[in-house]
Length: 187
Image (cartoon, rainbow, N blue to C red):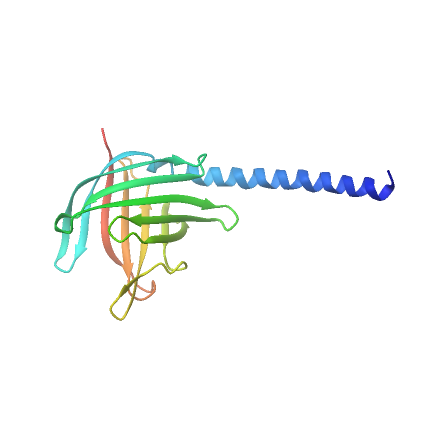
């Protein structure tokens, strides 16, 4: 074995060890970020209101279930929300964290439209997870434009958590409250 082979072999071993260590660090950051979503896990009774043209309309109590999936690298929620005259809707949300870009991603699909909506964001200074669909531009068409959404998950309460949905018709320059919900533990 010549010197060149020895040096090349040693370089490969160092590169492999460095890559494995870097991957361990990425994995640890991802798991740590996902652990911040622990308040979502469980079974919940969902109450709240939806804002409409004639003001706020109370929602009938709904149910939500959330639990960790994919080796704790994802958190999956299924929510059944009774919208009153609009009917019952089911939402499926997958929460993930991208440790390379340091961003949370939510993919949301409902049974009414079947469109996959992608949200990205981070925790704000108040400890709320704030995500929007602005960058992915998975907006809904409306007359004369597009409707984007901002999701705010507030885990700071002691009796469950709050979830608000805001809408924007001007690409996020202004936001208007659309849904205001509270998740209380299902006994």
